Length: 176
Image (tube, rainbow, N blue to C red):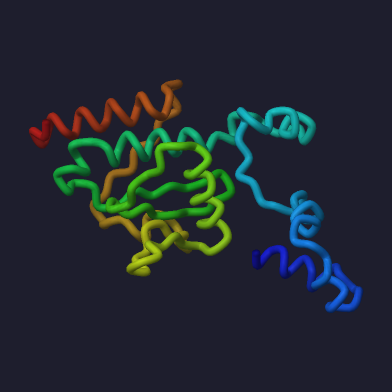
């Protein structure tokens, strides 16, 4: 709603009492084109192609699959996951706390990601505890000094490579 208020304040030049008389359903129709949306290559492929964008760069579903893989694993069940860090192609870095319950549907996950992008954090409404937050600075600033960062350009899906690492670590720590 803050976005709509901002649009109204910046672009509506008529008298405010007149605007208040406009029915809410008409206001909704007027501002649907201003709603934010998390682009993904499945639903927005035509738009992305027209913009000459690489469809592979618009895959929030991959982040959802990887987060579910990690948080539903014995690693998280045994309190071995301290945090998950995600860095976007645009350079945004965010941290996901292990207590977060990852949504099961794409739509709900996309809504949470939009909230994160807009407010820079996602909180539990009842306790005000931060579950996901945007971070400033390089990733190495948030990791222990002896951390190992591994990068690969081998063509594996993110879900499969995450599963391989998760299984290997669970076997190493004998978590089953």
